[in-house]
Length: 297
Ligand code: NAD
Figure 1: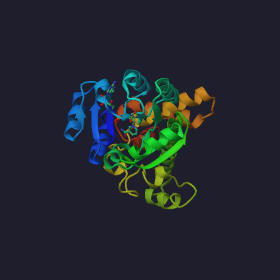
Figure 2: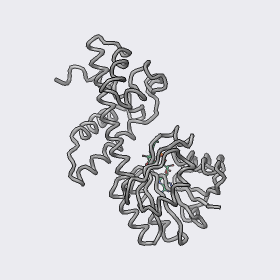
Figure 3: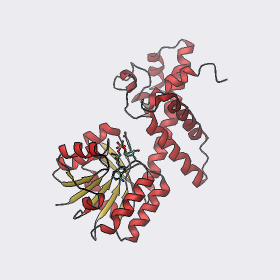
Figure 4: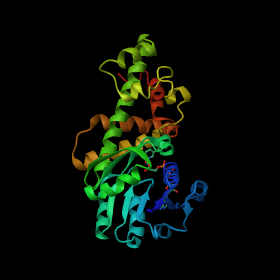
């Protein structure tokens, strides 16, 4: 049976590794944080003393780390120790350049690799309902898919090395911009004396319809499960949205794409975070916009 190593057992990696255990796989994990190791151990993950120890005997290696520099460092450390024929999968959200470089590192060691960032948040990680956006060769994707299916419900092959990261940041740039657009519409409606429900009933079945409105409405009421009904507890923290918007702007700059609304959305979330809201759900941006009343003309 496939033996899996899992490096990075935090808010996402912990429950993802636990789902691999639940599916009957032998999982050996490592994380720098003792608390993450303890939680994963309670879920049945065998904890190794180092990343190098964790990958010994593994045929599939998954990394779920904060940023590109961590992925490059960890892959650089473990790649020389991987068994011939093994597969390495990075599920972190990182910059496209680091993802492409990580694939090149793996290729230098003749190891198959996939970038497979996720959407679905901690709820999706716990429930094994994540969407994976994968980049890499067709053969590497075919090998990765059965493993990813144990942690998610939709697995999309987006193209070659780095294509998964490209899809992730393009999607989240749409999300950041559309959440601000929906929030602006509600703040304008409030000033015009239009009820939240009336705007929702019209826009949700008209040309303003989008996920930020119909699944994640930033005002309480119309969509009972949205974080607006729960004091804007995440959900998807504003700091993570800002991270993804910044990655989109780095990529746009490097590739020479014009993304003026993406740039503006990053500025707005930067101000929201600077005001102490990084830990709030990103839909809380509506409260920031209300505070800006009279400051924009
Ligand atoms: P987290 O901070 O909870 O977990 C990251 C873990 O990596 C930590 O436990 C940390 O100790 C560990 N780590 C860092 N460097 C390490 C190293 N060298 N060796 C071993 N372990 C190391 O973050 P998270 O919320 O689990 O997010 C992980 C990734 O998933 C990020 O790239 C994030 O952008 C992405 N993501 C998160 C969410 C979410 O809702 N939290 C949603 C989608 C994508």
